[in-house]
Image (cartoon, rainbow over all chains, first blue to last red; front, side):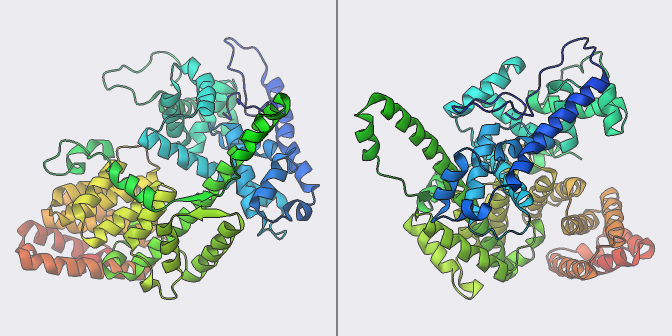
Length: 241
Length: 332
Protein backbone atom coordinates (compact mmCIF):
# COMPACT_ATOMS: atom_id res chain seq x y z
CA UNK A 1 0.00 0.00 0.00
CA UNK A 2 1.18 3.50 -0.47
CA UNK A 3 0.80 4.01 3.20
CA UNK A 4 2.08 0.63 4.22
CA UNK A 5 4.83 -1.71 3.23
CA UNK A 6 4.56 -3.18 -0.20
CA UNK A 7 4.80 -6.91 -0.74
CA UNK A 8 6.47 -7.93 -3.90
CA UNK A 9 8.87 -10.38 -5.43
CA UNK A 10 11.08 -7.51 -6.51
CA UNK A 11 11.58 -5.81 -3.17
CA UNK A 12 10.69 -2.14 -3.46
CA UNK A 13 12.84 0.67 -2.25
CA UNK A 14 11.41 2.07 0.96
CA UNK A 15 8.18 3.64 -0.10
CA UNK A 16 8.11 7.39 0.50
CA UNK A 17 4.56 6.92 1.67
CA UNK A 18 5.59 4.28 4.17
CA UNK A 19 5.48 5.85 7.58
CA UNK A 20 5.80 4.50 11.06
CA UNK A 21 2.90 4.76 13.44
CA UNK A 22 3.24 7.55 15.95
CA UNK A 23 4.80 6.54 19.24
CA UNK A 24 2.97 7.74 22.29
CA UNK A 25 4.37 10.86 23.86
CA UNK A 26 6.63 11.52 20.96
CA UNK A 27 8.98 14.40 21.72
CA UNK A 28 10.28 14.92 18.23
CA UNK A 29 10.26 18.60 17.51
CA UNK A 30 8.37 20.14 14.66
CA UNK A 31 11.68 21.36 13.25
CA UNK A 32 13.13 17.87 13.05
CA UNK A 33 9.95 16.66 11.49
CA UNK A 34 10.02 19.42 8.91
CA UNK A 35 13.60 18.50 8.06
CA UNK A 36 12.56 14.89 7.69
CA UNK A 37 9.66 15.93 5.46
CA UNK A 38 12.00 18.02 3.34
CA UNK A 39 14.33 15.07 2.91
CA UNK A 40 11.37 12.92 2.02
CA UNK A 41 10.17 15.43 -0.56
CA UNK A 42 13.65 15.42 -2.07
CA UNK A 43 13.55 11.65 -2.31
CA UNK A 44 10.14 11.82 -3.88
CA UNK A 45 11.16 14.20 -6.60
CA UNK A 46 14.44 12.45 -7.39
CA UNK A 47 12.63 10.23 -9.92
CA UNK A 48 11.64 13.28 -11.90
CA UNK A 49 15.23 14.31 -12.47
CA UNK A 50 16.17 10.87 -13.73
CA UNK A 51 13.25 10.63 -16.14
CA UNK A 52 14.25 13.75 -18.01
CA UNK A 53 17.67 12.27 -18.82
CA UNK A 54 16.20 9.38 -20.76
CA UNK A 55 15.95 9.42 -24.54
CA UNK A 56 12.30 8.54 -24.81
CA UNK A 57 12.51 8.25 -28.60
CA UNK A 58 14.78 5.24 -28.28
CA UNK A 59 12.82 3.79 -25.39
CA UNK A 60 9.45 4.13 -27.11
CA UNK A 61 10.52 3.00 -30.59
CA UNK A 62 9.09 -0.51 -30.65
CA UNK A 63 6.91 -2.88 -32.63
CA UNK A 64 4.18 -2.91 -29.99
CA UNK A 65 3.24 -1.97 -26.43
CA UNK A 66 4.52 -5.31 -25.08
CA UNK A 67 8.05 -4.45 -26.17
CA UNK A 68 7.92 -1.02 -24.52
CA UNK A 69 6.44 -2.63 -21.41
CA UNK A 70 9.34 -5.08 -21.18
CA UNK A 71 11.84 -2.21 -21.49
CA UNK A 72 10.07 -0.15 -18.84
CA UNK A 73 9.99 -3.06 -16.41
CA UNK A 74 13.68 -3.70 -16.87
CA UNK A 75 15.41 -1.36 -14.39
CA UNK A 76 12.65 1.23 -14.57
CA UNK A 77 14.49 3.66 -16.93
CA UNK A 78 11.88 6.40 -16.48
CA UNK A 79 12.12 6.15 -12.68
CA UNK A 80 8.39 5.59 -12.50
CA UNK A 81 8.59 3.94 -9.08
CA UNK A 82 9.57 7.17 -7.33
CA UNK A 83 7.05 9.11 -9.34
CA UNK A 84 4.22 6.69 -8.54
CA UNK A 85 5.11 6.70 -4.85
CA UNK A 86 5.20 10.51 -4.89
CA UNK A 87 1.78 10.65 -6.49
CA UNK A 88 0.31 8.24 -3.96
CA UNK A 89 1.88 10.25 -1.16
CA UNK A 90 0.54 13.51 -2.60
CA UNK A 91 -2.98 12.18 -2.98
CA UNK A 92 -2.90 10.12 0.25
CA UNK A 93 -4.36 7.05 -1.41
CA UNK A 94 -4.27 3.66 0.26
CA UNK A 95 -3.15 1.59 -2.70
CA UNK A 96 -0.52 -1.08 -3.23
CA UNK A 97 2.42 0.85 -4.67
CA UNK A 98 3.68 -2.16 -6.66
CA UNK A 99 0.31 -2.66 -8.26
CA UNK A 100 0.11 1.04 -9.07
CA UNK A 101 3.60 0.87 -10.56
CA UNK A 102 2.77 -2.10 -12.76
CA UNK A 103 -0.38 -0.43 -14.03
CA UNK A 104 1.60 2.77 -14.66
CA UNK A 105 4.10 0.77 -16.71
CA UNK A 106 1.22 -0.66 -18.75
CA UNK A 107 -0.44 2.75 -19.20
CA UNK A 108 2.86 4.29 -20.29
CA UNK A 109 3.61 1.41 -22.68
CA UNK A 110 0.21 1.67 -24.33
CA UNK A 111 0.41 5.43 -24.78
CA UNK A 112 4.10 5.47 -25.81
CA UNK A 113 3.34 5.09 -29.51
CA UNK A 114 1.41 8.35 -29.59
CA UNK A 115 3.89 10.45 -27.60
CA UNK A 116 5.67 13.11 -29.68
CA UNK A 117 7.42 15.11 -26.97
CA UNK A 118 4.52 17.31 -26.02
CA UNK A 119 3.71 17.85 -23.14
CA UNK A 120 7.12 17.50 -21.45
CA UNK A 121 7.96 13.91 -20.51
CA UNK A 122 7.51 14.51 -16.76
CA UNK A 123 4.03 15.93 -17.22
CA UNK A 124 3.09 13.21 -19.65
CA UNK A 125 4.27 10.51 -17.24
CA UNK A 126 2.26 12.02 -14.40
CA UNK A 127 -0.82 11.91 -16.61
CA UNK A 128 -0.23 8.20 -17.24
CA UNK A 129 0.18 7.60 -13.51
CA UNK A 130 -3.06 9.46 -12.82
CA UNK A 131 -4.81 7.25 -15.35
CA UNK A 132 -3.32 4.18 -13.70
CA UNK A 133 -4.49 5.28 -10.25
CA UNK A 134 -7.97 6.07 -11.57
CA UNK A 135 -8.09 2.58 -13.12
CA UNK A 136 -7.14 0.90 -9.87
CA UNK A 137 -9.58 2.90 -7.77
CA UNK A 138 -12.38 1.99 -10.16
CA UNK A 139 -11.37 -1.67 -10.26
CA UNK A 140 -11.16 -1.88 -6.48
CA UNK A 141 -14.59 -0.32 -6.19
CA UNK A 142 -15.98 -2.82 -8.67
CA UNK A 143 -14.30 -5.74 -6.92
CA UNK A 144 -15.72 -4.64 -3.57
CA UNK A 145 -19.14 -4.11 -5.16
CA UNK A 146 -19.43 -7.68 -6.41
CA UNK A 147 -17.52 -9.14 -3.45
CA UNK A 148 -14.81 -10.59 -5.67
CA UNK A 149 -12.20 -12.62 -3.79
CA UNK A 150 -8.89 -10.91 -3.04
CA UNK A 151 -6.05 -12.51 -4.99
CA UNK A 152 -3.12 -14.08 -3.17
CA UNK A 153 -0.73 -11.22 -3.71
CA UNK A 154 -3.22 -8.56 -2.69
CA UNK A 155 -4.23 -10.63 0.32
CA UNK A 156 -0.64 -10.47 1.62
CA UNK A 157 -0.60 -6.68 1.23
CA UNK A 158 -4.00 -6.22 2.85
CA UNK A 159 -3.10 -8.59 5.69
CA UNK A 160 -0.13 -6.39 6.63
CA UNK A 161 -2.21 -3.23 6.83
CA UNK A 162 -5.35 -4.88 8.17
CA UNK A 163 -3.81 -6.56 11.21
CA UNK A 164 -3.59 -3.45 13.41
CA UNK A 165 -7.11 -2.44 12.41
CA UNK A 166 -8.47 -5.93 13.05
CA UNK A 167 -9.73 -6.26 9.47
CA UNK A 168 -9.44 -9.26 7.20
CA UNK A 169 -8.24 -8.69 3.61
CA UNK A 170 -11.71 -8.55 2.03
CA UNK A 171 -13.01 -6.15 4.68
CA UNK A 172 -9.90 -4.04 4.35
CA UNK A 173 -10.28 -3.78 0.60
CA UNK A 174 -13.80 -2.39 1.10
CA UNK A 175 -12.47 -0.07 3.79
CA UNK A 176 -9.73 1.19 1.46
CA UNK A 177 -12.30 1.76 -1.30
CA UNK A 178 -14.38 3.87 1.09
CA UNK A 179 -11.26 5.70 2.31
CA UNK A 180 -10.00 6.44 -1.20
CA UNK A 181 -13.37 7.99 -2.05
CA UNK A 182 -13.07 10.60 0.69
CA UNK A 183 -12.05 14.16 -0.06
CA UNK A 184 -8.30 14.48 -0.41
CA UNK A 185 -8.17 16.73 2.67
CA UNK A 186 -9.71 14.03 4.85
CA UNK A 187 -7.38 11.36 3.48
CA UNK A 188 -4.36 13.59 3.94
CA UNK A 189 -5.30 14.43 7.53
CA UNK A 190 -5.72 10.76 8.45
CA UNK A 191 -2.47 9.71 6.77
CA UNK A 192 -0.53 12.54 8.36
CA UNK A 193 -1.84 11.90 11.86
CA UNK A 194 -2.31 8.16 12.01
CA UNK A 195 0.34 6.89 9.63
CA UNK A 196 3.07 9.49 9.43
CA UNK A 197 2.73 10.50 13.05
CA UNK A 198 2.42 14.27 12.74
CA UNK A 199 1.12 16.08 15.79
CA UNK A 200 -2.38 17.51 15.57
CA UNK A 201 -1.33 21.10 16.29
CA UNK A 202 1.49 21.01 13.78
CA UNK A 203 -0.74 19.57 11.09
CA UNK A 204 -3.55 22.04 11.79
CA UNK A 205 -1.00 24.84 11.46
CA UNK A 206 0.26 23.44 8.14
CA UNK A 207 -3.30 23.14 6.84
CA UNK A 208 -4.26 26.59 8.06
CA UNK A 209 -7.29 25.41 10.02
CA UNK A 210 -8.27 24.75 13.60
CA UNK A 211 -7.13 21.60 15.34
CA UNK A 212 -10.76 20.59 15.69
CA UNK A 213 -11.32 20.76 11.94
CA UNK A 214 -8.16 18.75 11.29
CA UNK A 215 -9.18 16.15 13.85
CA UNK A 216 -12.62 15.92 12.29
CA UNK A 217 -11.10 15.38 8.86
CA UNK A 218 -8.85 12.63 10.22
CA UNK A 219 -11.82 11.11 12.03
CA UNK A 220 -13.70 10.88 8.74
CA UNK A 221 -10.72 8.94 7.40
CA UNK A 222 -10.79 6.59 10.35
CA UNK A 223 -14.55 6.17 10.10
CA UNK A 224 -14.23 5.24 6.43
CA UNK A 225 -11.65 2.60 7.30
CA UNK A 226 -13.59 1.15 10.18
CA UNK A 227 -16.97 1.36 8.45
CA UNK A 228 -20.13 3.16 9.58
CA UNK A 229 -20.58 3.06 13.33
CA UNK A 230 -23.72 1.30 14.63
CA UNK A 231 -26.47 3.75 15.57
CA UNK A 232 -26.43 2.79 19.25
CA UNK A 233 -22.69 3.28 19.61
CA UNK A 234 -21.68 6.24 21.72
CA UNK A 235 -19.15 8.64 20.32
CA UNK A 236 -15.66 8.01 21.71
CA UNK A 237 -14.78 10.04 24.76
CA UNK A 238 -11.64 12.08 25.10
CA UNK A 239 -9.41 13.39 22.34
CA UNK A 240 -10.14 16.46 20.32
CA UNK A 241 -12.57 15.02 17.85
CA UNK B 1 -31.71 15.17 3.34
CA UNK B 2 -29.41 12.20 3.19
CA UNK B 3 -29.92 9.35 0.76
CA UNK B 4 -29.78 6.95 3.69
CA UNK B 5 -32.99 8.54 4.91
CA UNK B 6 -34.76 7.50 1.74
CA UNK B 7 -35.20 3.71 1.98
CA UNK B 8 -38.94 3.88 1.31
CA UNK B 9 -38.60 5.82 -1.91
CA UNK B 10 -35.63 3.81 -3.14
CA UNK B 11 -37.27 0.41 -3.03
CA UNK B 12 -39.84 -0.60 -5.62
CA UNK B 13 -43.45 -1.11 -4.51
CA UNK B 14 -43.86 -4.65 -3.27
CA UNK B 15 -40.17 -5.01 -2.43
CA UNK B 16 -38.72 -4.82 1.04
CA UNK B 17 -35.29 -3.81 -0.04
CA UNK B 18 -33.10 -3.23 -3.03
CA UNK B 19 -33.19 -5.89 -5.69
CA UNK B 20 -29.92 -7.81 -5.99
CA UNK B 21 -28.01 -7.40 -9.24
CA UNK B 22 -28.92 -9.74 -12.03
CA UNK B 23 -25.69 -11.75 -12.09
CA UNK B 24 -26.88 -13.97 -14.90
CA UNK B 25 -27.41 -10.93 -17.14
CA UNK B 26 -23.92 -9.68 -16.29
CA UNK B 27 -22.45 -13.09 -17.03
CA UNK B 28 -24.27 -13.25 -20.35
CA UNK B 29 -22.96 -9.83 -21.37
CA UNK B 30 -19.43 -10.76 -20.25
CA UNK B 31 -19.59 -13.92 -22.35
CA UNK B 32 -20.74 -11.99 -25.40
CA UNK B 33 -18.21 -9.18 -25.20
CA UNK B 34 -14.67 -10.14 -24.26
CA UNK B 35 -11.21 -8.85 -25.05
CA UNK B 36 -7.77 -10.28 -24.27
CA UNK B 37 -4.15 -10.27 -25.36
CA UNK B 38 -2.90 -13.23 -27.35
CA UNK B 39 -0.37 -15.02 -25.10
CA UNK B 40 2.73 -17.06 -25.90
CA UNK B 41 2.41 -20.84 -26.26
CA UNK B 42 2.23 -22.47 -22.82
CA UNK B 43 4.19 -25.53 -24.09
CA UNK B 44 7.33 -23.40 -24.22
CA UNK B 45 7.32 -23.05 -20.42
CA UNK B 46 6.92 -26.77 -19.90
CA UNK B 47 9.97 -27.50 -22.02
CA UNK B 48 12.16 -25.09 -20.08
CA UNK B 49 10.76 -26.18 -16.74
CA UNK B 50 11.65 -29.79 -17.45
CA UNK B 51 15.36 -28.92 -18.03
CA UNK B 52 17.86 -27.23 -15.71
CA UNK B 53 16.10 -26.52 -12.35
CA UNK B 54 17.77 -23.15 -11.69
CA UNK B 55 17.14 -21.96 -15.19
CA UNK B 56 13.61 -23.22 -14.92
CA UNK B 57 13.00 -21.32 -11.66
CA UNK B 58 14.39 -18.12 -13.16
CA UNK B 59 12.37 -18.58 -16.29
CA UNK B 60 9.16 -19.30 -14.44
CA UNK B 61 9.65 -16.25 -12.22
CA UNK B 62 10.40 -14.03 -15.18
CA UNK B 63 7.44 -15.48 -16.99
CA UNK B 64 5.18 -14.85 -14.00
CA UNK B 65 6.32 -11.21 -13.92
CA UNK B 66 5.79 -10.84 -17.64
CA UNK B 67 2.41 -12.49 -17.38
CA UNK B 68 1.33 -10.07 -14.66
CA UNK B 69 2.51 -7.16 -16.78
CA UNK B 70 0.53 -8.48 -19.75
CA UNK B 71 -2.53 -8.81 -17.50
CA UNK B 72 -2.14 -5.13 -16.71
CA UNK B 73 -1.74 -4.18 -20.36
CA UNK B 74 -4.82 -6.21 -21.17
CA UNK B 75 -6.79 -4.35 -18.49
CA UNK B 76 -5.59 -1.01 -19.85
CA UNK B 77 -6.88 -1.95 -23.30
CA UNK B 78 -10.18 -3.06 -21.77
CA UNK B 79 -10.56 0.19 -19.84
CA UNK B 80 -9.81 2.29 -22.93
CA UNK B 81 -12.22 0.36 -25.12
CA UNK B 82 -14.82 0.37 -22.35
CA UNK B 83 -14.52 4.15 -22.11
CA UNK B 84 -14.97 4.53 -25.88
CA UNK B 85 -18.04 2.30 -25.88
CA UNK B 86 -19.51 4.28 -23.00
CA UNK B 87 -18.93 7.51 -24.93
CA UNK B 88 -20.50 5.87 -27.98
CA UNK B 89 -23.57 5.07 -25.87
CA UNK B 90 -23.75 8.74 -24.86
CA UNK B 91 -23.45 9.93 -28.45
CA UNK B 92 -26.00 7.42 -29.63
CA UNK B 93 -28.49 8.37 -26.94
CA UNK B 94 -28.06 12.05 -27.82
CA UNK B 95 -29.78 11.25 -31.12
CA UNK B 96 -32.74 9.52 -29.54
CA UNK B 97 -35.47 12.07 -28.66
CA UNK B 98 -36.53 10.03 -25.60
CA UNK B 99 -32.96 9.84 -24.30
CA UNK B 100 -32.04 13.43 -25.18
CA UNK B 101 -34.35 14.76 -22.48
CA UNK B 102 -32.43 12.62 -19.96
CA UNK B 103 -28.92 13.63 -21.01
CA UNK B 104 -28.58 16.00 -18.06
CA UNK B 105 -28.36 12.94 -15.82
CA UNK B 106 -24.89 12.18 -17.16
CA UNK B 107 -21.93 14.17 -18.41
CA UNK B 108 -22.06 15.63 -21.87
CA UNK B 109 -20.65 13.38 -24.59
CA UNK B 110 -17.49 14.21 -26.45
CA UNK B 111 -17.81 15.29 -30.10
CA UNK B 112 -18.24 12.60 -32.74
CA UNK B 113 -15.02 13.61 -34.51
CA UNK B 114 -12.96 13.36 -31.32
CA UNK B 115 -14.60 10.02 -30.56
CA UNK B 116 -13.81 8.71 -34.04
CA UNK B 117 -10.14 9.65 -33.71
CA UNK B 118 -9.91 7.87 -30.38
CA UNK B 119 -11.77 4.86 -31.71
CA UNK B 120 -9.56 4.45 -34.76
CA UNK B 121 -6.44 4.83 -32.63
CA UNK B 122 -7.73 2.22 -30.20
CA UNK B 123 -8.50 -0.25 -32.98
CA UNK B 124 -4.99 0.25 -34.36
CA UNK B 125 -3.44 -0.38 -30.94
CA UNK B 126 -5.55 -3.49 -30.36
CA UNK B 127 -4.31 -4.94 -33.62
CA UNK B 128 -0.73 -3.88 -32.96
CA UNK B 129 -0.74 -5.53 -29.53
CA UNK B 130 -2.32 -8.71 -30.90
CA UNK B 131 -5.54 -8.48 -28.94
CA UNK B 132 -8.25 -11.03 -29.49
CA UNK B 133 -11.93 -10.32 -29.08
CA UNK B 134 -15.19 -12.22 -29.14
CA UNK B 135 -17.17 -12.27 -32.37
CA UNK B 136 -19.98 -10.27 -30.78
CA UNK B 137 -17.57 -7.55 -29.74
CA UNK B 138 -15.94 -7.47 -33.17
CA UNK B 139 -19.37 -7.13 -34.80
CA UNK B 140 -20.33 -4.36 -32.38
CA UNK B 141 -17.13 -2.44 -33.11
CA UNK B 142 -17.67 -2.83 -36.82
CA UNK B 143 -21.12 -1.27 -36.53
CA UNK B 144 -19.62 1.59 -34.52
CA UNK B 145 -17.53 2.42 -37.59
CA UNK B 146 -20.68 3.48 -39.47
CA UNK B 147 -20.57 7.03 -40.77
CA UNK B 148 -24.02 7.88 -39.44
CA UNK B 149 -24.31 7.64 -35.65
CA UNK B 150 -27.94 6.56 -36.13
CA UNK B 151 -26.59 3.32 -37.65
CA UNK B 152 -24.58 2.49 -34.55
CA UNK B 153 -25.84 -0.17 -32.13
CA UNK B 154 -28.48 0.98 -29.63
CA UNK B 155 -27.26 2.94 -26.60
CA UNK B 156 -28.30 0.12 -24.29
CA UNK B 157 -26.24 -2.43 -26.22
CA UNK B 158 -23.23 -0.11 -26.22
CA UNK B 159 -23.56 0.49 -22.49
CA UNK B 160 -23.84 -3.26 -21.85
CA UNK B 161 -20.74 -3.95 -23.93
CA UNK B 162 -18.85 -1.24 -22.05
CA UNK B 163 -19.89 -2.75 -18.72
CA UNK B 164 -18.89 -6.26 -19.82
CA UNK B 165 -15.38 -5.12 -20.74
CA UNK B 166 -14.69 -2.53 -18.08
CA UNK B 167 -17.47 -2.19 -15.50
CA UNK B 168 -17.79 1.09 -13.66
CA UNK B 169 -20.50 3.28 -12.22
CA UNK B 170 -20.45 5.75 -15.11
CA UNK B 171 -21.23 2.88 -17.46
CA UNK B 172 -24.03 1.77 -15.18
CA UNK B 173 -25.45 5.29 -15.20
CA UNK B 174 -25.47 5.20 -19.01
CA UNK B 175 -27.32 1.89 -18.81
CA UNK B 176 -29.91 3.39 -16.44
CA UNK B 177 -30.37 6.36 -18.81
CA UNK B 178 -30.81 3.96 -21.75
CA UNK B 179 -33.35 1.92 -19.78
CA UNK B 180 -35.32 5.06 -18.86
CA UNK B 181 -35.25 6.18 -22.49
CA UNK B 182 -36.56 2.78 -23.55
CA UNK B 183 -39.39 3.08 -21.03
CA UNK B 184 -38.10 0.25 -18.84
CA UNK B 185 -38.78 2.31 -15.73
CA UNK B 186 -38.95 -0.53 -13.23
CA UNK B 187 -35.57 -2.00 -14.16
CA UNK B 188 -34.00 1.47 -14.32
CA UNK B 189 -35.30 2.20 -10.82
CA UNK B 190 -34.00 -1.12 -9.48
CA UNK B 191 -30.54 -0.58 -10.89
CA UNK B 192 -30.32 3.04 -9.74
CA UNK B 193 -31.46 2.07 -6.24
CA UNK B 194 -28.88 -0.70 -6.10
CA UNK B 195 -26.08 1.75 -6.90
CA UNK B 196 -27.19 3.99 -4.06
CA UNK B 197 -26.55 1.21 -1.55
CA UNK B 198 -22.82 1.61 -2.05
CA UNK B 199 -20.36 4.37 -1.30
CA UNK B 200 -20.49 6.70 -4.27
CA UNK B 201 -18.69 9.90 -5.09
CA UNK B 202 -21.10 12.84 -4.41
CA UNK B 203 -21.37 13.64 -8.10
CA UNK B 204 -22.37 10.08 -9.02
CA UNK B 205 -24.69 9.89 -6.05
CA UNK B 206 -26.59 12.94 -7.31
CA UNK B 207 -26.84 11.45 -10.79
CA UNK B 208 -28.23 8.12 -9.57
CA UNK B 209 -30.60 9.87 -7.14
CA UNK B 210 -31.91 12.04 -9.98
CA UNK B 211 -32.27 8.98 -12.23
CA UNK B 212 -34.23 7.19 -9.54
CA UNK B 213 -36.33 10.32 -9.01
CA UNK B 214 -37.23 10.38 -12.72
CA UNK B 215 -38.21 6.72 -12.56
CA UNK B 216 -40.45 7.41 -9.56
CA UNK B 217 -41.95 10.39 -11.40
CA UNK B 218 -42.86 8.11 -14.27
CA UNK B 219 -44.37 5.63 -11.84
CA UNK B 220 -46.49 8.57 -10.61
CA UNK B 221 -44.96 8.34 -7.14
CA UNK B 222 -44.63 12.11 -6.97
CA UNK B 223 -43.88 12.50 -3.26
CA UNK B 224 -41.05 9.97 -3.50
CA UNK B 225 -39.75 11.63 -6.64
CA UNK B 226 -39.75 15.04 -4.95
CA UNK B 227 -37.76 13.74 -1.99
CA UNK B 228 -35.22 12.10 -4.28
CA UNK B 229 -34.83 15.25 -6.38
CA UNK B 230 -34.29 17.21 -3.17
CA UNK B 231 -31.62 14.73 -2.08
CA UNK B 232 -29.99 14.91 -5.53
CA UNK B 233 -29.91 18.70 -5.28
CA UNK B 234 -27.91 18.46 -2.07
CA UNK B 235 -24.99 16.61 -3.61
CA UNK B 236 -25.15 17.57 -7.30
CA UNK B 237 -21.95 19.17 -8.57
CA UNK B 238 -22.71 19.78 -12.24
CA UNK B 239 -24.75 22.92 -12.91
CA UNK B 240 -27.04 21.26 -15.43
CA UNK B 241 -27.78 18.44 -12.98
CA UNK B 242 -28.64 21.01 -10.28
CA UNK B 243 -30.74 23.00 -12.72
CA UNK B 244 -32.82 20.07 -13.90
CA UNK B 245 -33.19 18.52 -10.46
CA UNK B 246 -34.33 21.88 -9.07
CA UNK B 247 -36.77 22.43 -11.94
CA UNK B 248 -38.25 18.97 -11.50
CA UNK B 249 -38.47 19.54 -7.77
CA UNK B 250 -40.27 22.85 -8.32
CA UNK B 251 -42.65 21.18 -10.72
CA UNK B 252 -43.40 18.30 -8.33
CA UNK B 253 -43.65 20.61 -5.33
CA UNK B 254 -46.25 22.68 -7.16
CA UNK B 255 -48.13 19.53 -8.12
CA UNK B 256 -48.11 18.37 -4.51
CA UNK B 257 -48.63 21.79 -2.97
CA UNK B 258 -45.42 21.32 -0.99
CA UNK B 259 -44.36 24.87 -0.17
CA UNK B 260 -41.08 23.96 1.57
CA UNK B 261 -39.73 22.07 -1.43
CA UNK B 262 -41.09 24.65 -3.84
CA UNK B 263 -39.30 27.45 -2.04
CA UNK B 264 -36.09 25.48 -1.83
CA UNK B 265 -36.18 24.64 -5.54
CA UNK B 266 -37.02 28.21 -6.51
CA UNK B 267 -34.11 29.44 -4.39
CA UNK B 268 -31.71 27.05 -6.11
CA UNK B 269 -32.99 28.07 -9.55
CA UNK B 270 -32.56 31.72 -8.71
CA UNK B 271 -28.98 31.11 -7.50
CA UNK B 272 -28.12 29.17 -10.64
CA UNK B 273 -29.48 32.01 -12.76
CA UNK B 274 -27.01 34.43 -11.18
CA UNK B 275 -23.95 32.27 -11.91
CA UNK B 276 -21.38 33.47 -14.42
CA UNK B 277 -21.38 30.18 -16.32
CA UNK B 278 -25.16 30.04 -16.46
CA UNK B 279 -26.54 29.14 -19.87
CA UNK B 280 -30.01 30.69 -20.39
CA UNK B 281 -30.66 28.39 -23.36
CA UNK B 282 -30.45 25.38 -21.08
CA UNK B 283 -32.95 27.06 -18.79
CA UNK B 284 -35.30 27.73 -21.69
CA UNK B 285 -35.06 24.09 -22.78
CA UNK B 286 -35.75 23.01 -19.25
CA UNK B 287 -38.76 25.33 -18.93
CA UNK B 288 -40.17 24.21 -22.28
CA UNK B 289 -39.95 20.52 -21.43
CA UNK B 290 -41.48 21.03 -18.04
CA UNK B 291 -44.26 23.05 -19.65
CA UNK B 292 -44.97 20.17 -22.02
CA UNK B 293 -44.91 17.70 -19.13
CA UNK B 294 -47.35 19.86 -17.20
CA UNK B 295 -49.67 20.07 -20.20
CA UNK B 296 -49.66 16.28 -20.43
CA UNK B 297 -50.37 15.96 -16.72
CA UNK B 298 -53.27 18.42 -16.99
CA UNK B 299 -55.00 16.16 -19.43
CA UNK B 300 -54.88 13.35 -16.90
CA UNK B 301 -56.10 15.29 -13.90
CA UNK B 302 -57.14 18.80 -12.90
CA UNK B 303 -53.59 19.81 -12.10
CA UNK B 304 -54.03 23.35 -13.40
CA UNK B 305 -56.76 24.21 -10.97
CA UNK B 306 -55.27 22.40 -7.98
CA UNK B 307 -55.92 25.05 -5.33
CA UNK B 308 -52.63 24.71 -3.46
CA UNK B 309 -50.69 24.64 -6.68
CA UNK B 310 -52.59 27.65 -7.94
CA UNK B 311 -51.76 29.57 -4.78
CA UNK B 312 -48.06 28.67 -4.97
CA UNK B 313 -47.93 29.35 -8.65
CA UNK B 314 -49.36 32.83 -8.22
CA UNK B 315 -47.04 33.51 -5.32
CA UNK B 316 -43.97 32.45 -7.31
CA UNK B 317 -44.82 34.38 -10.43
CA UNK B 318 -45.33 37.47 -8.31
CA UNK B 319 -42.25 37.22 -6.12
CA UNK B 320 -39.57 35.20 -7.92
CA UNK B 321 -36.72 36.38 -10.07
CA UNK B 322 -37.42 36.68 -13.82
CA UNK B 323 -35.70 33.39 -14.60
CA UNK B 324 -37.63 31.43 -11.99
CA UNK B 325 -40.78 33.19 -13.14
CA UNK B 326 -40.18 31.91 -16.66
CA UNK B 327 -39.99 28.36 -15.33
CA UNK B 328 -43.11 28.92 -13.26
CA UNK B 329 -44.90 30.35 -16.31
CA UNK B 330 -43.91 27.28 -18.29
CA UNK B 331 -45.36 25.16 -15.53
CA UNK B 332 -48.56 27.16 -15.52
